[in-house]
Amino acid sequence: MIQLNSLENTPIIVQVGNFIRDHYSYLIISTVALGIIVGKIHPAIMRGLTSYMLYLIAIMIWAMSVTIRFSDLSLTFKKGRLIMCGLFTNFVVLPLLCYLLAISIMSRYPVYAAGFILMGTVPCAGMNVVWTSLLKGDVALALLLGALTMVLGIITIPLLTGILAGVYVSVDILGMLNILVLVLIGPITLGMITRNILEKRGGAKASNYLPAFQPIAAVTAMILMFIMVAVNIPTIPISEDILVVLIVPPIILFPVAFGGIHLFCNKTLKCAWKQTVAIVYSSGMKHLPLAMGVAFVSLGLQAALPIAVAAVFQTLNASLFYKIYQKGSCEMLLDASGRP
Image (cartoon, rainbow, N blue to C red; front, side, top):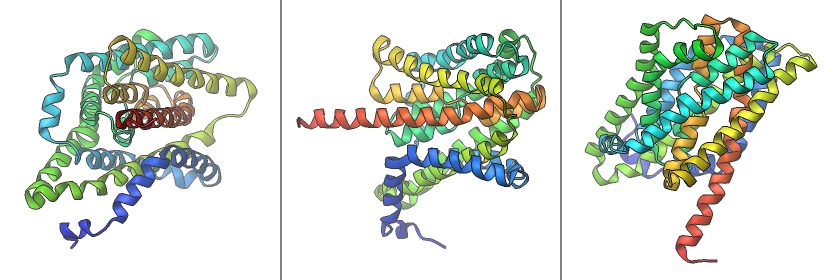
């Protein structure tokens, strides 16, 4: 059995965490490319991995939740303006953007359009916490937005999809609640319990153990992305018309969403940099595994194709903005230190 004190003498944990944080965008892009290749070669094997996705999501959220205290979340509940901003961008801005792109570009393929709109209605992804943490943003705010959007998603998925797509998506409410307990509420609670145990057993040295959990969350997120891409991308029918219909909307969507939300938070609401990062990633990063699951059940396999394609561009866009935010963070640190 590994003793807590052994972590103190394992600097490799910190090194791994720093490496992932500094190179995460390249690691994600490599993961997407590998997923496409392996999915083409071994599609049957990759499909067999989908049953493990919920467990991987739960592990990812648990690992990130270890770094959060109960007091952190209670303080976040007082940030009403920030919470309302995050909910507004999640359930108004993104669904409307997806709707406008769908009716403009995908109208000749109604099933694809419905799937793309459905993608805009789902909650934010657990990966929002990973990106926010790697950028040293407001992780507590990102976690809270993830929890709130997941709970509200039980209502918003069928309601918003029915209004915007004209197709009522039947959602198993009890099944959604089970998923919520499995991939969000349960892991967050367990993560906080783990943090409490670490602090009780390690005292002031508890902070030495926390670097072990960030790499777990980041690597799990990459595994999830690999499975999602490998399973869905190989099923896309190859034709020039369909490729344009599937590729153009996400190419437009994510830069507009990330950039627009950033400007709204930073320039209009005058949010702090850490809070802006949390809201941007908690709005622009959609829970695409959940979206594909609902699409499979309610709209059919074809409706999941635009979501699978969007997964690639969401990741690439998140990586691009990660580099932009990372550069901005370094510049702020230089300014704060008084160096030119």
